[in-house]
Length: 313
Image (cartoon, rainbow, N blue to C red; front, side):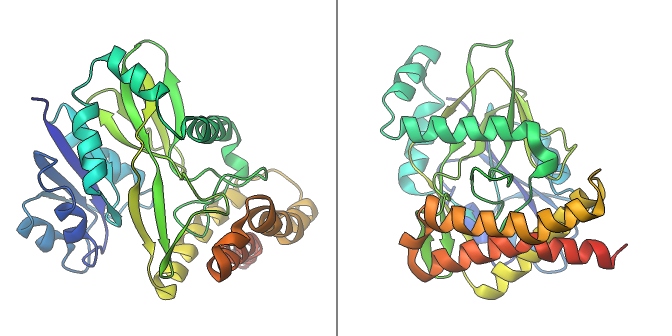
């Protein structure tokens, strides 16, 4: 029986950590938490829930601690989650099934996925976006949804090292819980994130604020989604949104465009195109007022980032 580890990197996640770990009970054989010096009870609660807790500093690039958690795991497979993600019973059963399959069985499974075309389209966007990371920015949820505009695809970018023909990593779709309901339109779903990886076959190089997952071998998909408790309240939504705007400021500092060009691009072009792309082209309007709020704040993060950039010199 193959051993499965749960890897978590945390900072002030006392409201999430227990539910996340509990959702994986009966699925994983060990839980490793790398805690970035949380100022709340995250570490203590994780210990009580049966996790091995490694305390370290809170890195400005959060992927550093994610990679530390991955490296500390001893399982044959690693489920790397964020604390605000939950594994459903259906997803747990699928994970158990997939890690026990042969490569040939996995190939047949991939061909039989009902949403195969949607998943492949999302993955192609993820892969193409990795070559435009300087143009991309973090969005209103974890990242921004895939659009035709130069925003970023949410979740890890993918660089495949073609020296292994085995399936060594899997995207998992996510249902994002946003202000009391799930977003199903606006370019948000499937919000594929690489969360299941084979030990030693995938890692985060930690060279960018955007997750760049390097995988040795093939990358597949699971059908059942993770539940993502990203923004259950408007307060948490604004807090996270503000952090990602700070990441955009870092990108602005590395831009080589002229100031006039940056001003018009970030204050007018990006917000307008993003808002209407999410609301109309990606049918965010079907999510009602939640879709409008998501589109609006996804759009105004660009001028807000530009304002912070100019204020910080």
